[in-house]
Structures are given as structure tokens and as C-alpha cells.
Image (cartoon, rainbow, N blue to C red; front, side, top):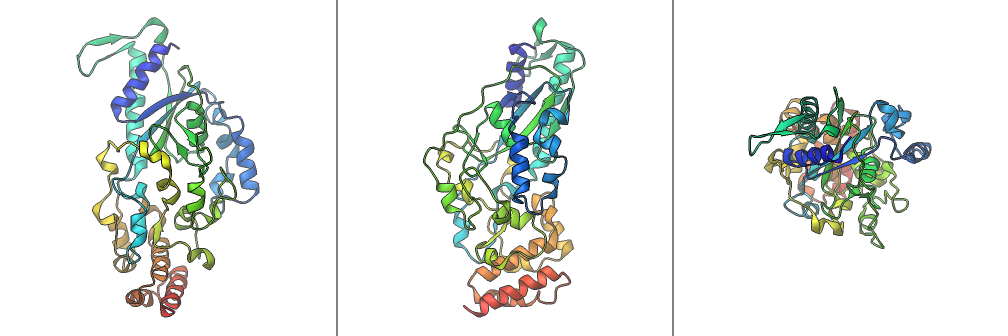
Length: 368
């Protein structure tokens, strides 16, 4: 397939609103399977059983859809307008990860991926496209035409290892915090993938540019990085507040601060963010009520109120009980005796984990 078609697809991806678009082969990360197996064998995935399931697909993108010839990896920026670490200085407020302060990115990115995918299919099938600005019909070169191309789109919900594929495609590199980093975008961006039967020229993999910097490792409140480029999810606050069911180890609760959904510390401290680009989609902008929500108010949410408050937000998927558990841990860490009634009110909650968190918060505040 011609380089001309690839250039057109990349250009259209940028027109659709993506910040970057690069190509990788489905078999571009042969080391992924072994690394994943070692990670799971050490138990570092915690309760995320889905990581161990279908490891053959997750570790080998080529096996997920054998007909695919290329993977288009795309970056969608969501750079915050303010310092995400500032909220940590307000102990009576809850810190919600930047990515979850706006519309659910799964919905936003997948719609954009599908739109781009439809454009790819129609353009190749028809042998050309109508330019949006000039309204003229642009004919593809002979080498860029094909019959019935197919696509599959993925956004963080299928057994696809997006970060290794994105690094192989040249979107960036996996930093010492294991997240993807870019010299042009920093690390505030989502990843989307389009698998396609089109045979597109791959891009050059990115090189690692972390150097001697260890800022992301040093700032982690729970010591979740056993070594550079390694993460133990069982100690990661993002995992603990989102994926972990049941009570959190008391030693880790005390280190969670007021983080009630996710954690941005290792992302926010990265020096490469000086090159971060502002997000282009207003749907991903932070909602005002999620920038610094009041812990006492959040603790009073019942199931119906929780669902209403977080409608359209990624927060909704963890459910009211786990969310209120997190809020109570934050109340216990607040050092604010005025929040004691909020904790006491939940000591008889129907959920056992919430009751445990309420008692723990009360004990902490009674010692202040």
C-alpha cells in the first residue's frame, strides 16, 4: 500500500482532532507476551484478573485479529489547565484524576476513531475523497486503492497493549512511570487504536528520553515502582481507588491522602509536560463540580445520587460503595475534626467495606 495513502490517513486523523497518528505492524512488540507473563506471575496485577485472561491476545496483537496488516495508533490530548497537584493541599476536598474530570474518554475517543475508520474505508473503496475545504474530488494514486478494506477500533477495553504498540509506532516511549511519554505532547494523552487490513508503511519506534530523571518515581506516595519502568499495581493509588475491591491495606490508606479516584502525581511531575499541548475537545474539559469536590458532600451520596452526579463520567463505573470508601479514606487522612460527623454517619452503612472505612476515618480524626 502506498505511502501516499498513509499520509492522507494521518492528515485526516489530525483533521478529526487527534494530536498525533503513527503506524505499527501488529507483530511489532514480540517482547510484550513475555513481559506480561512475568508481570502476572509476580502478582503485580492485583485483582485485575482480566490481565491474565486471554494473555495470548494481549501479549500478541497479531493474534487478536490475524487479518490485520497495520495498526494506526492515535493520541488524544487532555492536558489540564491547572496544576493537578494543587488539590492535594486542600484536605477537605477530593482529588479526582484529571482524565476523569470530564466526559468519559472511552465514548469521546471511540466516536472519533469510528469516524476516522469510516473515512478510511470509504476513501479506499471509492478510490478518492472530497476535500472538505476545496470541495474537489481527490483521486487516490493507483497503488493506494484496494477492495473492501476492514477495520477494528479499540480504546482501552479490549485485550490490546496500547502503550507498547504506541511506542513501536513512534508516538512516544514508556517512561519510568510506565506511562507513554512524548517530546511533543508530554504525557497527558489518551491512546486509541485502529487495526486494519490495509498494508500501510510503519513508522520508526520512539527512543527513550528519560535520562537520569527519577521525578515520577520519587513522588509516588505509596512506593508503587519497584524499579524504573516497573509498576506494582497493588501499591498504585490509581489501582487502589478504581480496580481494588474491598478494604485497602491500612498502611496504604494512610498514604492515599485525599485522592478519591485515580492519582496524577507521577504524570504531573514529569518535566516533559512543558511541551504538553492543550486538549482540543471540550467534552474532555474538567467539569467545575469535579475540580475540588467537598468530601463531606460526597460522603452523603446514596446510589441514586452517585449515579446522577457522575453520569457520563468514568467515575461512575466503580459504583457508589467503592467511591464512598475512597471518600472516607480521604476524610480519615484530612486531619480535619469537622469531618468527623460525616464519617460517623456511615458507620452503619449497608456496605461492610464502607462501614470499615468509616470506623477507620473516625479513629484517625479522633486522634487529631
